[in-house]
Length: 310
Image 1 (spheres, helix red, strand yellow):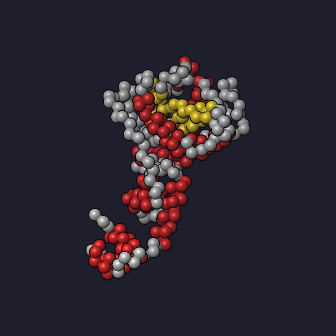
Image 2 (spheres, rainbow, N blue to C red):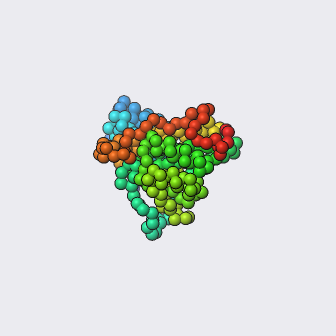
Image 3 (cartoon, rainbow, N blue to C red):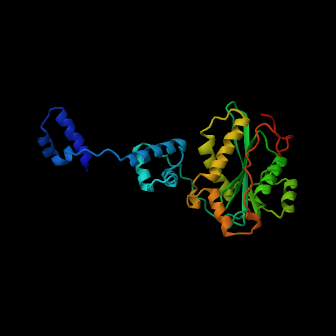
């Protein structure tokens, strides 16, 4: 079916070429002459401001879909719906290609508890690797709260051993309180006896996933896919110091500003604040402490014996 707009363009073409009159073109195309003469009104100033801001947010967050962009626009006071944002982004060619579908896993995870019920119930941790521009190794430890999706630790180093894992986790516990459970794979840093003793002394139970079953640690794997897509694949990291700044800025933005679909498009910090108000007096739900953003050139709690210089 040919739309009226397409018919208008066809009529204008034959008229401009001198092939027939406007009356004849409208008659042949079965197009009302009033429709041919119709000219759209210019957009209202508010609509133009909406489109401008939509383009700015899309450039700032190129991997955000229309749902998250709509949430951020409404937070800035625009009266806009998801479908309108989707239509405007498609018209501007800003549609984000969908990720490839993965094969659905069959069977149930054997880890317990399978789902966190409150803040500080289950933490999850894992490593993700990348490199600087000249090929220098970057290894990052991620510590994530499965209930609020807050990222408590996202620390890049050249190498991270079990002693460094202990130091980073103890710093997170000092700021956010000790979790009841902590889930991980069977990496050597996570099964080290010294680490297990430290966790047992703080009444933190460990959950180890089945070997070669990363889906059992799905929360941190999901975060790593977002982190790589929205940060690591976008940035050129030249030095370790630059990587620390860029990655810590992303962690803070992820916790404080990024809308999270599984949290009703609230940021993790905002969702965590609601969890705190809903469960007052809990030892694991006390207010988070200051930022964990590391100093660039000063010594930290991490042992320097296993971390090379930048």
